[in-house]
Amino acid sequence: MSLGGNPKWMGLPSSQRPPLTMVHPERLPGAPGPYTAGRRRVVVEVPAREAMLAPLRNILGAIATFEGLDSDVVADLCLAVDEACAVLINAAAPDSLVSLDIVADAQMLVVDASTTCSRPEDAGLGRFSERVLSALTDEVGTFAAAADTANGTEDDPGNSPGNDPENGTDPRGVFGISLTTRRRPPTASDAVSD
Image 1 (cartoon, rainbow, N blue to C red):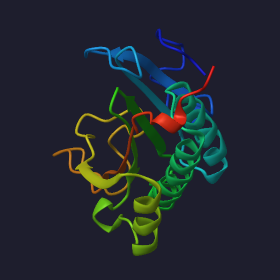
Image 2: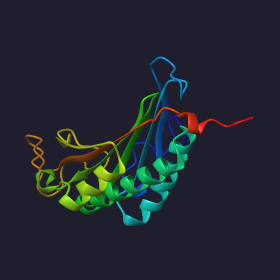
Image 3: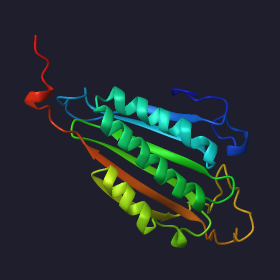
């Protein structure tokens, strides 16, 4: 795991990277809030394999706990990310990474989980997954984008089957799931008596 800088594995294909990569933590601009000293962002990338679900849960749980979320909210968020990442792993193209983009501020914690899919138009949330995620978080959304492989990427140099290097077409794309958990203001029952 790396916390910034330009480690020697940056730019290597995912098969040659360490199994768990924290791409970068950074402070985001914004006024300090009552819960945090500003906005923070952490991006974590792991190979799209089921064996990586537990480390992702642990990392997210640590971040959510650090952000001061209630233990029940942390548990719900970890379950939601586990379900979202399981969906993404099933849809992922071979040798893809699952990326968690975690942004926290005074009002909420947002987790955007995404991966590269062979056919992003076929990826999506099933009804069961959507219900589970909706029960565990305040907002659930999905997003998709075309893969940017016109000039090749570190995971795909632009000449894999199905690609047309002449015009940069690639049937692959990115599919993601966005999960939002809003912070609850402290109540009188949360106050500790002296």
